[in-house]
Image 1 (spheres, one colour):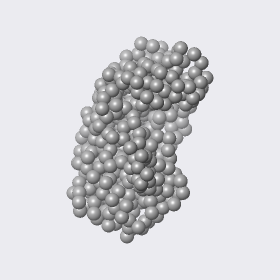
Image 2 (tube, rainbow, N blue to C red):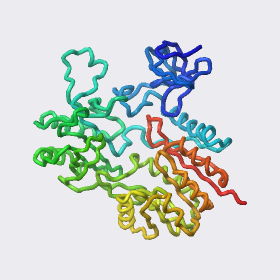
Image 3 (tube, rainbow, N blue to C red):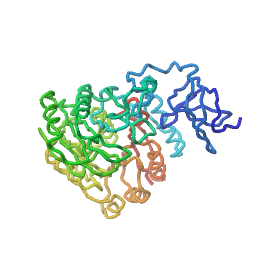
Length: 464
């Protein structure tokens, strides 16, 4: 059968592809269908046709899969955040594990690699320690609201509906953050509604209220509230700060980030400290980290401890090794490994991250970690000594080819590769396989109800 755009088909979903979409086949031709799971029988309309695949949207769920479960969230299927809430959590782990295996085999061209079952997140709800909610003067309407001609279509604060940049779903509860965050969100919504200042229009780029960012300390159970506005009007935001501090003892920090930039990013051009501390503190294992509004910290604290424990296990340190950590960020991995290594050197291109890493070492009385500021592809060729172990934790895009060449040139005995993207991990390790055996991979789930998965890979140098 020749699949055509606009065509209506009845299909059976047989798999989930990386990216979270269900996969069906028409005479061997792949059709990707959003919001479906294996064993769904669906009626779909083809929305996009390419040479090797097509995309479709569901018109009717003819027969639901036994793998489906009832989502806790009323916005499931509409919000772009938790696309897998309707899939049993054990099955989520199963598919995430298979996505890692398939990437290694089909992209890295390595067969028979030991990929362990994904480690489960300790919590599958209430696990996120950071949430960003967008303000909009045009909210996205839920299906039941479309029938009400008198429904208010203006202000909303929440998360974007997939495929929209200027409309947000007006969310009153997000279940992947701790419950107090929802109470704070609703109080801020009520305050903005009563404010005389206009909400920022994501299309017009005019207005005052832009974002709300909430950060939570899993170890201390306190909160930072970061209010992002287009201009500084302290007399407008200070009463909100005072209200939140008075109502919730757990709120220990309120700041105001100000940005006039059109980009939809909840980072201020500068920051005004309003009440309480200018940071919150969270722990990873025995180590303590100060987290400011715009600093990086893993969004699932307990999940990060799982991840770093695997990194430590795969590094196999005895206390005598020199460890080189690429893309070292704010120093969380070097600090985690510091008690097991002789010396750790981190390389990081972001100046503020290097500053935070050095400060985190001081705060934790760690004296065997040092950090080099610079582009890794420029710094690596200048290093004269070979590290015993190399940790590589690149961004989603993976390593630059010049970095791969330098890694091969340094040729440490062991490499521990940490990745949030199975595809680029497989590609990068595939480029290292001439000198390294990929011994094992441990996926670690830090983002339940999404298709995202972290992985830790252990590579050993092939002895000549």
